[in-house]
Image 1 (cartoon, rainbow, N blue to C red):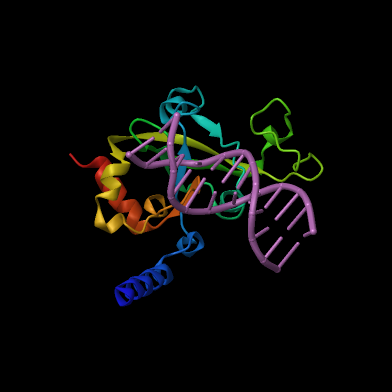
Image 2 (image 1 turned 30 degrees about the vertical axis):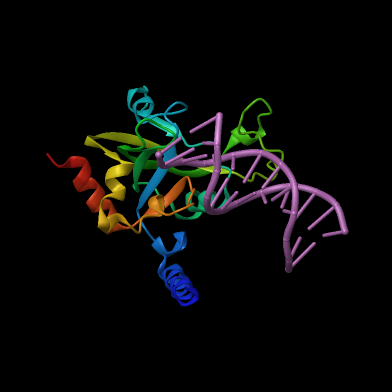
Length: 182
DNA sequence: GCCAACGTTGGC
DNA sequence: GCCAACGTTGGC
């Protein structure tokens, strides 16, 4: 029994070595961005007059660094609905402006207020997304989990909570296939 | 509403 | 720098 437990342990350690860290997906021009549709949905973006939205409220350093250092105009975004019924990718968009200061951090009345960030020394940034495009099919989390070739996506990794994640070109084309197939 | 898994904070 | 306590995320 102890031997079995030990070999399980080694398999787990081995797997943890094989697991890609978020930064291993860089550089990339494909991203997944999570939003709770009750707060801001793909349709909110689509039906807004400008079809653009400044992505405020990100308060995680790794997600911030992706926006600040790696997301460029023209990059493609998978718009993901979290805490939703159902959860999954609801549409495609583009980065239309690279990162600028997130002023919501200065606003004491904002849920995104953060005393760490000041106008003199801003801490948080956001990109602007736009050019929303509908998918033929909503890509459910369930269908992503069911697809072996997508098993390395950060999204489906246990405990991974990053709200902005790099996506590999192979993963993106597979997702696009799922989103567009008849 | 529950809770696992994570990130952050702050005492030491 | 360690690490316990706490707050948050997000699927179910």
